[in-house]
Length: 531
Image (cartoon, rainbow, N blue to C red; front, side):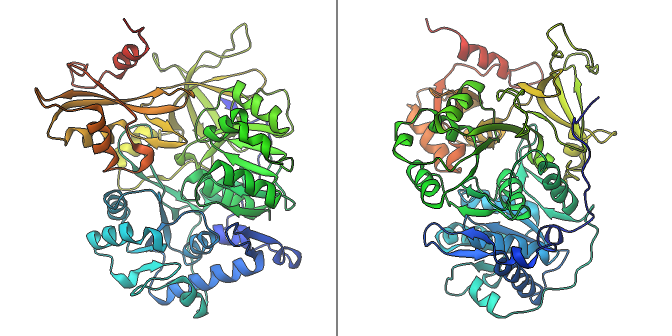
């Protein structure tokens, strides 16, 4: 086993609310917690805590308690923090939904999570209302934060000033959040993360990330994604930093906000690093306030990271995680300059890792002559490991072993310097701009098309070396089906990040004798020279 090079940290037995807000000092109350670039409005920590408690009180007055699941469909706006933490303060479980989801995708998550309340914003109301109606959520249980006729709104609920409820639960076992992840394979599943999981991961991240109350963090990664939820929303609040919220990524707006609000710390996904490294417009902005850029959610190649860091004169860090790990398990330390940015850094405090040979199942412990182990599947054990998948004991058993290790499905090597590098993915998920896409979900959709006889989906690299979904399609004879037809059909039925971006027609999908799609054969076909 490989242990973290850093000493264990104390993980208090507290709820998320008590951990983040319970220790606010008089000085903290006046600090700026949230900034809305659209209006310039600022929310202090004192005001945020009061809003969180008031929203929790309003929910409790309407019967929301520790047995309730509340869904949250909302982009990054300051009020997200009020609602998210208000739900947790009320003792309920929050399931965050991708704000780009279609009504059908929202409906599936509401149904699977058992949500009886939904909170959204007016621009997303049409799809929210359709999904809510489909699962039986009434209008009075559909809160529209910025207001809509026939629905409760956030201002009214806060103005009631209902007292926050007295709630009692075990932080180690009570489910705080239910983000949805495809895990190592298959369709999205509800990941049960306890209050302790979330508290632990923030506490584990603190030593590696030089974040303080002097920092202004540009919050462009979505809060509904576990990465944004933990390292942006919760970590920044714990460290009393200021969050400048962005509802969606736009490069000019991103650079403008850094310059205007003097942002100092950026949490990003690899496509933003590519833009920082290569896009000419970056030179038109003064972003010299930035001292640290941390990339996660998908692999970032070391060369791009180094170019970006040199260009903007900032420290580039990289980490690794997954929803099932709350999500961070590995991160580069801001003060260690001997660890290459092509790696994902060291295991966080309180964690142990194992590497397992994917062919033999044997544990890998020896270093080669180059000071690096042989590659093996990465297993992680620690207080940030999920409780399991909601109502899915078989998937839980496949991912969590009897010793408490989570099998990531990713292949890594360990260096004598005490850090890891991810070298391959044993699992079949496609990671597009930090979002997980399950090939099986797109394949099921493609097979519902009357002119498609068979289909398979793999991840391929685009011109910027970013992974995108490609569909191999067996068309019905004389169907006249075109690549554009296939892409348009998928686009009409899924969130934008799940769209198929390349199509190749093929005579037959390669499969094993058991009927399993041989994706390695499709990858080999993709890699073969043309002609």
